Image (cartoon, rainbow over all chains, first blue to last red; front, side, top):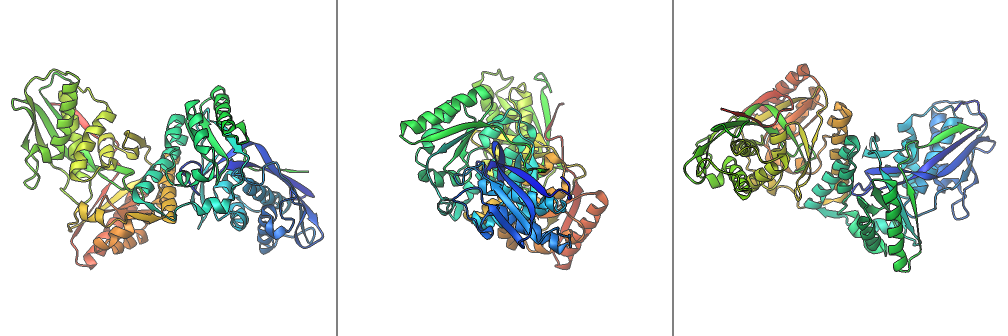
Length: 317
Length: 317
């Protein structure tokens, strides 16, 4: 990563936002699919989007998360008086992650866009400043939260203590943790899934959620995967969202019967995930979730993954 | 600790329940004052209270937490067919902790009572079973929660994930953590303080509380005292209880100005506590809190302490 390179390339992983009971608070980077952004000097001012990465994504830079985040990085550099080699920066996006479905694709694009632009500008921003730039982007397309952004940027399992000021903790991953992801062929807009959440909660639900999120953090540090599974017990968002995701309840039951330690909705859905202790069981769990959806006539794909530990990776081209 | 001894003596520390944002979920054992219970074989059936420890405490064994917890331990032993040396057990209680005020006195008596009886009966119960016996007692006098009980029994900072089934995690203590306790001469019943808590909360408050409690846990494992202080930010119970505790707001402000990393109500109040990074600052904070109460004409005592690491200590007499 050097300021002299004329092109910088960044890739960022998808993730599970709202991890279990951790609405807006816990996120987890997922291995495998990645979004890629290449940043290069360009003679048009500000940020130009050479390729948005997908025909359904906005080609206007003010509406694409990679470009919004890169624009925030560029504005930062200008305020600091960093000399630019051209009027602006052009981005080329390659989407490895699906556009929707609760896999953290918009956050991955933002993390890669911000990181590629930052590298081109001499890597003047630290992780906290990059998080702030990406938060701008995520706020415009999906809501003001950092769980997906922080995991895409830092990798691992992340805890978002505060947005104002930004205060994020990267947690250790319990050994052996395997993920099973199920992606039913359903569309569920983040906005609709968000509207389903009650605006108020009973005190007992709050204390339950506090205790579970805290126990997940203890499980990460204590390397206690069974505790991680027991604490993956969401009594707030999951009950509200399950009715919007036909097949989720059946797939969850099948996953637990097949040996999963815990299951919940990924992000705002309709994807779901299961936590499993070993690869062999993970295969069984994937087949069981698949069979549950099949039995209901709902097309669904599953994949095995682990917690991505790298976060965003940048290299000069 | 041997089953052959004819008298067993247990001491248990007080604690800060509802630690900061962790209503019912986080507790912390406090060094210094302890409740003591001596258990001995006795010819009357069940549990006899030879001395309740204080004239204002019930002398009836069914209403004193040490005796209720010991009775649960005795019932457990009888179910397991443990042979008794006499018809029952007699308890002598010495109160080191005040009767009320949010210092975990009822939980300390329960922990000491259960542990002394358990030792007399051959120490057949593990920590989880003892927690269950003490929970019976605490539920009768102060509410069904384990934060104070678990810290009194296990020592340290504790996280209560679940009551049914009991699932408790003992957390590491961040190095250097000093406590300042302020005890204004006010009476505030736990019941009244509990009634002040709203029965429902806004979603934003819930996510804030989840994030803070989780960050406190991360701070314990990560040995990050500043994070522990930042996360000590309760937007649920403290705002509801502060109006019932004249002087709290002023003492809190004074503590923070004197260098405390965080402050909140201890248990259900009216005691409060501050988290401080070193003894020198702790002295300043104690004086500042004292001065704030003095300025309002409210009598108040303060003391310095640390997190008790021993929990309940049992020895044969």
